[in-house]
Length: 117
Length: 111
Image (cartoon, rainbow over all chains, first blue to last red; front, side, top):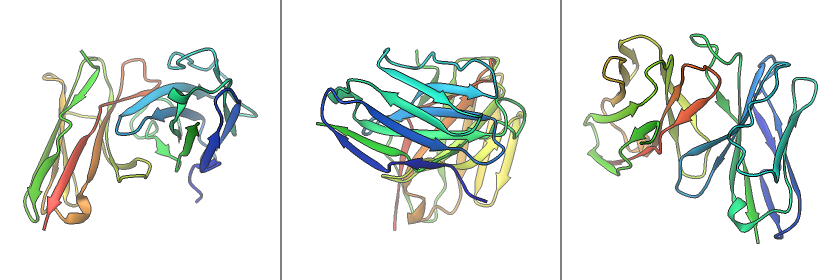
């Protein structure tokens, strides 16, 4: 079946502009995660959605970052007033559930490379 | 102290040898443990998952978990140049709602 898809694959924007990044999870996966990976660094958790529960926003670095998940499927990560330090690869992942042997295995999309000039 | 720690490497191994990667974690209540492989410019792909103490083998890969000592390791047998990548250790903590990743270990397999 289809994996996690993300769009756009690359985004170049000017400092101060807003950007929207999209994630389509694997069909049937109730949990969706956003991570950020700066050049040569590990993955930084941003936000997590599980079904209809309130999202875990504990990883969002500032109030310029927000995300929503419509209809329990597609998610959009929005960065307002982008800064150069926002440049990174933004990765989305999905899993069947948030916990439980095997069900919490996360599968990653190809990522969106964001460059803020 | 980071929640999940890995040696950043690079870990250089000759082709055909065993590569041994280690990872320690701080949340004693952690339930699930994963190893991901990430090629340069690509997204992480799952190599192994392990949930119980002991060894779990899948092809050339063996994951080892010791919850008492709070470490998880990955062995790559008969290493191939195609195994050259960054290996990420990830832990699903007691809260069970997100993975915490280590910084990754870069592995170089030399022909």
